[in-house]
Image (cartoon, rainbow, N blue to C red; front, side, top):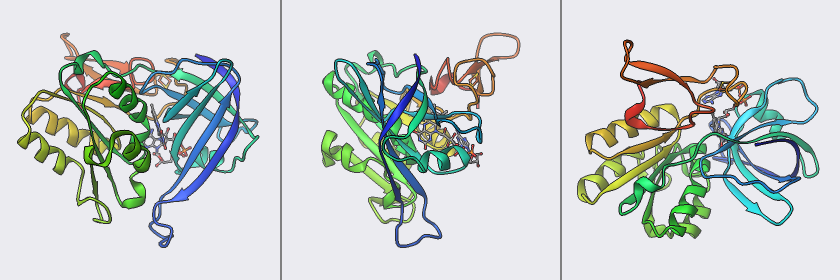
Length: 276
Ligand SMILES: Cc1cc2nc3c(=O)[nH]c(=O)nc-3n(C[C@H](O)[C@H](O)[C@H](O)COP(=O)(O)OP(=O)(O)OC[C@H]3O[C@@H](n4cnc5c(N)ncnc54)[C@H](O)[C@@H]3O)c2cc1C
Ligand code: FES
């Protein structure tokens, strides 16, 4: 882990539906230059904040989307949704500006578990950022990968073109709530259909909004498919100190569960472990 000042290389802002500003969600694609090389594993995240500001005081958690290493430095990329104070401050940054960077944090996906099976990546909204490096790694390991990507509208299928380049469009199933791309509805509907029609062994890896993760967990359980979920708990410190990110995990004890920290024990948990 390094605690450093990173430099903005690119910060491109875009909207989900440029013609309809009322309902449009806004996003940023951020590329940072780190002053030293760093090993970053799929599913890990960084805590980021615009350098030199005190409002907000705390850094915000962002999953690594892509990483590019050279001999003496690393460039890292993020996709963020502009929601509140932290991400709004990030959206004002331009090339050359400085960012408080703490990373790489958290655990990584269990890749050994998928050997001999097909990997189904199920993502919604900015959750797609947390699985792109996983898809790259699985392909390197010669594991079959199929992506189910969902969003409210076409412009919310984040990273879609990069995934098509990586996986090929025949291995991607998309769904949008408004029907503007792919199937109309939630991404769990084509996921269920695929699991009904294809009975070979599979593992699901998923990241997205809480409601989507609950739905994915139910589909996984009903079809007896193990699932790893990357959780997006609100985080203050990111390094196990504040306990603000606790999640209940089943355990054989009097209470039937213990609390674990999403930042240091996660963010990736087996679905069957979670006491939701
Ligand atoms: C491990 C991890 C990885 C993440 N990766 C990404 C990513 O790649 N891209 C991305 O856009 N976001 C990601 N997030 C979520 C991101 O950290 C929050 O959206 C961000 O902190 C919001 O900060 P803000 O100051 O802009 O909004 P705030 O002012 O803090 O909040 C704005 C609104 O968002 C809600 N909110 C805040 N934090 C979260 C959260 N963690 N989950 C759900 N709702 C929240 C608040 O309740 C409020 O309604 C990740 C979170 C975690 C824990
Ligand atoms: S965010 Fe502080 S302990 Fe997890």
